[in-house]
Amino acid sequence: MPPRSKRFSGEDLPDGSSTLVIRNVVVLGKRTSLRMEPEMWDALSDVAAREGHNVHDICTSIVERKPAAASLTAAIRVFLVNYYRVAATEEGHARAGHGQGSADIIAAALSMYNPPAAPAE
Image (cartoon, rainbow, N blue to C red):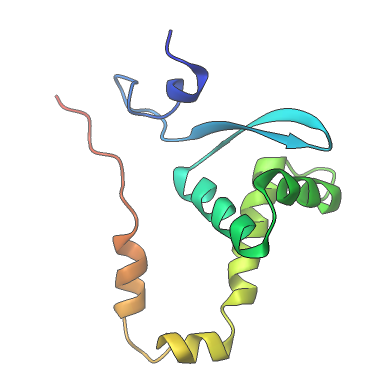
């Protein structure tokens, strides 16, 4: 059996049923496993580096503030969306040329999405 981190990556599964990546993080001093898309892991790492923290610290802060009914994975996704929404201020958009009626930023964002290849028949 492949290591746990590979079982759900989609690369080693014959039907490519999942592209989620499993990683361990330490939250409140306890190790836990999370399954998220590679882009979410990248975004979480980028935010942690930009803010001078590690992923474990960010996840601990999230779990301390999330609603009790929310899963940690969902809370991380919401945090990432909110982080980037806060960062997407009018000034930031103006400097980057966003929001000017141009579809270039949308095309650029969509070009970053790499859907998994269809399974060979």
